[in-house]
Image 1: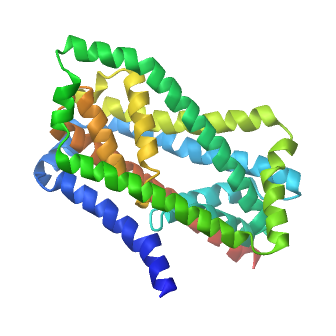
Image 2 (image 1 turned 30 degrees about the horizontal axis):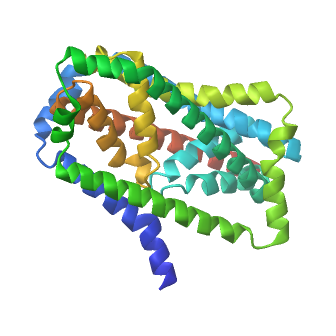
Length: 328
């Protein structure tokens, strides 16, 4: 019974939640219009350029991870770190948040790196990434609030009109997403308690957390950390130029939309599907983009970016397995 409940929480519920939100958002979509947007109205050159910046954060994350492992006496190959990161992103498409465990297991299999030590460095990464995300979000809101209020004034739009456009179902979806995020946090804490079993495992993980103090080049580590988020943002922002209806939006507006979308991904669905679409669509509408166009933008960009994650994951898996065959 406990095993069935675990499977339901980890796999079934995230898919149901994501698909439910997507169905609600796109239930009236004319799919021939979607095809027309992708084939005739989207600028593929800008979209392809954005994909290059989708690869950059994963590469930077791998470089940073290798730096964090070196003080622990672990020296994995750079390519193994990259492949493990590629596979971890792809694995999270199936089971949300499983990527951290996947990449540690992959690196152990490929280069014999201690699983618990590498998991400790991942905990440190999450802390650094969370602090940066909060910092960037705070900056985005501080910079964009005056501009957003000026935009409302120039377009003769008041907050009441915007709230009226946000339907009752929209409020329900927002509430469900918040509850799901809280449940995911609770499950993560319970899951972490599993790793506390065994003094050796806890010591190895704590050693991984403290590895940040021993990183050989801390400024470079922090540079990679910022580069990851810069890459994420450019991956999103450059896609704006693929469509006429978003190309005019300022970089500040795009940054705020990006931050809101990033928080939406905390809701445990595969690759943020559903909550991310809803958040990005809502923010685009607030900036004057027509709802149908905002919906198309969210679907198109997320679908293409997800396809990139799948391709990179397949590449990482193929390269890891080819190395294994050569060494066996």
